[in-house]
Length: 414
Image 1: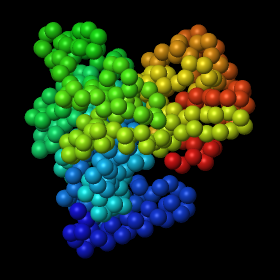
Image 2 (image 1 turned 120 degrees about the vertical axis):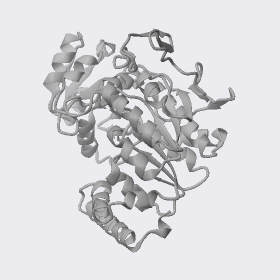
Image 3 (image 1 turned 90 degrees about the vertical axis):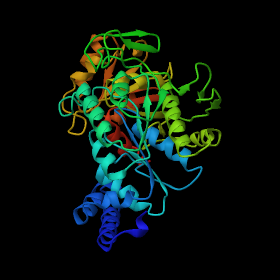
């Protein structure tokens, strides 16, 4: 670990912490990005040097990275201190800062942006790599999803080394990418969104689906038998030996039970007893503001983040059946400027309840809801949205910058 850093690396680490502290003091953010950037300018190998000697897990995928990283951190903390980028700074600058902030942590759980997986494999030499899912996201500036799966496959084949891969058996793109690795632990994590995996990524033929099972009748690519799975009944994870580990999660929805299953599978590879780890997952109540509950003017708002079609579909699975819903959509640089993806989302489940639409691109969303026959009203901002719904519970679903705007309005930084 960092106790054996070179003088140059120690100096870079000091500057990193100073830059991060100044960023926080001036209200410009938590300092993860600028701190890491300064440190890597002074010592380009700083990430590699800070990761040396630690037991590292990288967690990547289109959706669920931040939550699974938080669950994994909670589980591994049963046996020791964990360095983690818990607020989602998931590129090398954020990873470097996370490691620098916890120099004595023996373990590291790092959320990794999908496009930086290869760079982190080389720099961090992870013991475990968790691959969650792949689906369309920010298509105006991100790689097409099958091309990204191909990039992952090549990267894992050349750079995975001694890493054990924990992978989602229900996602054909993940299975194809991970199947080149020697050590794979399969998790039945589910796949509600299947529009990006109707075609075999290996040969281009149509994939047949039978319930949870899927296969390609042309080349033979098929769903592997999972060692870990979410229980069919109740809220539990089933391990490789068939034992049930009961969950008491504060976070809602089937997708978070799947994230918990992945976290327990990862933690077990670090020697954590799942029976010891599972109760610790119940301590996670909010993840970088996601799922946070806010009281305003007699309304109890629950904040849900949804950045892409798969994420919106999962959010609709989480919301309670009766409360009004506020939908907020922006299209700024980090969101992607193209909002055409909203036509991939089925909004019909919102029919029959009060729906309020806001955000920079509220009129785009209004047209989409009109197409699906969902009644709605349009307002200028979150304050107007609160005023437009009756007192009581309210579900708020927003994409990335819209979500950050709402957090700022409520002074929610956690």
